[in-house]
Length: 211
Image 1 (cartoon, rainbow, N blue to C red):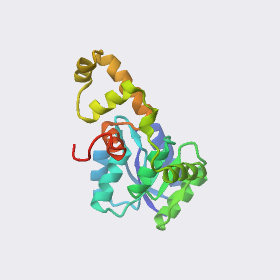
Image 2 (spheres, rainbow, N blue to C red):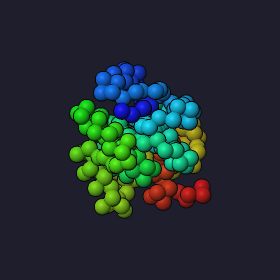
Image 3 (cartoon, rainbow, N blue to C red):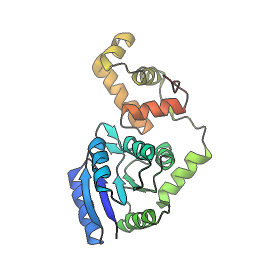
Image 4 (cartoon, rainbow, N blue to C red):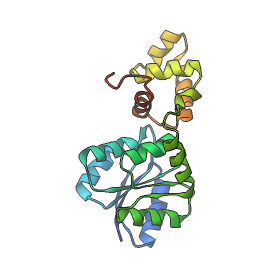
């Protein structure tokens, strides 16, 4: 069986996953809620499988996945997340994830994903396969079209690095109102942090990659 590292920001979820994995013969070599700490642990522990959530408080698991790809680390990534956004499935696969499983799926599906990942194969849950197909057959679909004109104004300023207070001054809104807009547009787009917004904005040419 495999050596697994967990990245998940809910302790009770990590406890449950550890119990499940160990009952199936896997060894959980470490765990974290923080991508930076996880990267340091992965370099030190060298597990075979990374079980990765995408929504980690104010950060994204894709941030860690991108760094693993940049360093060409051999760990196989199995994404386990609530996010059923087609573009997030596509980005995870683009960054080298071996499997994408939705939370709420049967435990047997997760175990199959891990087994296949260890053997160098890909796995998508039944529902995820449809999401991936949607993402890859509609490459020009623009998730930014979901945003209102005001939300598009705000996302542009956010990815340019402006604070809620600065955005509020420009748009004559209170910082609290700007924060509400930010939270709402990030939920619409299925991202959990500013780096995720920047990647989305670059991909859909809202901003230039050199910005």
